[in-house]
Length: 294
Image (cartoon, rainbow, N blue to C red; front, side, top):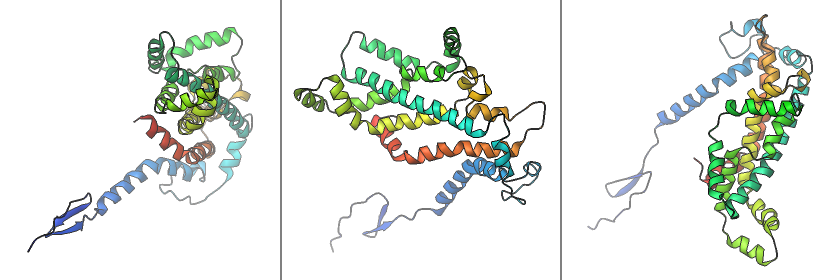
């Protein structure tokens, strides 16, 4: 008898002329679940501690509070000189300005590198890539001296002006890679219809760059919201503090740290990050996939 020829496919095994599905090992799923729980445990522990009395945080081993309370949130909200909403608004101003600055300036610079021809283009592109290798500690001192000479210390401008000048080389490179993947035939068709570079940029390139722009916005939000070092350097007035700097003021070396309010306000500070990330997650995946970044 002739045996039918079977083609082995991924996930199947050929035995006695019949395909058989490979059973996935449950141990693999159990291991992934355990690993995910281990990664999330510090966050879960902090969430649980935000509902505990400060005296019970380091004495109760379990995650479920024996005497749950909401006082940590009310106490932490008004524990500092200003209500915590002031620091949330300050962080919102810095984050919103940084996002707008990066979206506008980095997209313009990326379009120039990807579509325009000018002298020393490769040299300037190499300089831009080289700026990505400079740590913040190298440039923070010259920036502080420069902004101090123009009397901008203790304002938001030292945190916003660099974004308006396309100083984040990572986002410029990300958008350059994305724009290079767009066919130039679209530019030629728009040029035949009478569009110049500005028309091509706003009518053709920008609508097609939504995944890259969303990726830039998400990373800018997360990095700026969590930025502590530069905000601590440039903001000296407690009324100008952002969320990371305000959380740091809870810790006092001369007195007992109120860990309950600290954890409560930390959970409040994490809320916008999770919300913004979940809202733009699908654009983030598309942006990274289409720009070739791994």
